[in-house]
Image (cartoon, rainbow, N blue to C red; front, side, top):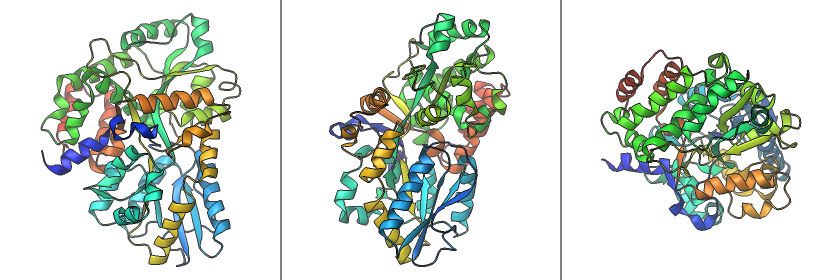
Length: 457
């Protein structure tokens, strides 16, 4: 196993040992939120990295509340405090952004500040010399580095060098459920995979979909596999893929997880037509809070949008949540979690020296400032800043925030979302095959064969 493979494997398995004393040691922040919205501008005037004047820096990020508003407010505060050096913000929907940013970076037209998820995508940019090496800058600014959770730097690091600033929030994947629906059906939250399978016919008989799923977006399907692989075989099963081990996808535990997944699909475990529902539209969340689905596996970032869009679903105590349960006989630790150990801000290597200086000042003075942290907490999220737990007192979402804090800090392993940890090429093959797996057009064995072909690519 070469050193690069080892380092890639290790950053995926962010362990609590990296900094238990910091609180949320396995911190995160959306696969940033996979949010809805249309392309828009915020901050100063619209513009990309290429169009921005030398005294301005540009910043692209995701739409969708509450994240979009918080990011926009941070830009506005920075611009108000720095009238001669402005940052221009431009927003995009999640899926559109992924395409747009790759194209812009490849063409040398990237914004000054690049919002991202770290992992494999960041590695591809770093390997191509398209993003700034921030290692020496962090060394010269220890106060900036030390105020962030130590474990968030794993997915920002490539070959021992730091290429992004961790930002925003910790975001584990959560199993949500509608308490009102459960009460009407006379059911209890599942404590095992066996319980999940037993609940499926019970909810179907009551005319309620067991699970909501925005399957057209593909990455939403992936969250199921991330947990099943972990709960059945433990973190080393998927870790072998990142280590580049030959035929790693054919591990018996992998085949078992893929098989169990298709059992749930064949049992009508998901809302009818799930493969045509998009996550960017938040339609999957609406199915949960309107009672058309009993449960939903999704990122913690959806709590804020359900609170704002779902009437009294959250405020009225109708929303339940839990960590994904264990699998009977599985080797995985049911206290572990998956998701996103942080969102990440990189600086384009093509930016001017003045633009880079503006970006670094933004990182130091505006990103995860006290004002921004308070907004994240108010939205129902945990910022990845040390001492953020002190801001939870008195929050209307205190129970939720304590739950997220507990899941994230208590997990021995906080695995990064697969599609963000893998290279863009392998990730696209993964998402394509996951869609086929959920559509029952490939078998578990065919899935493994297809994915073995792109190991290390």
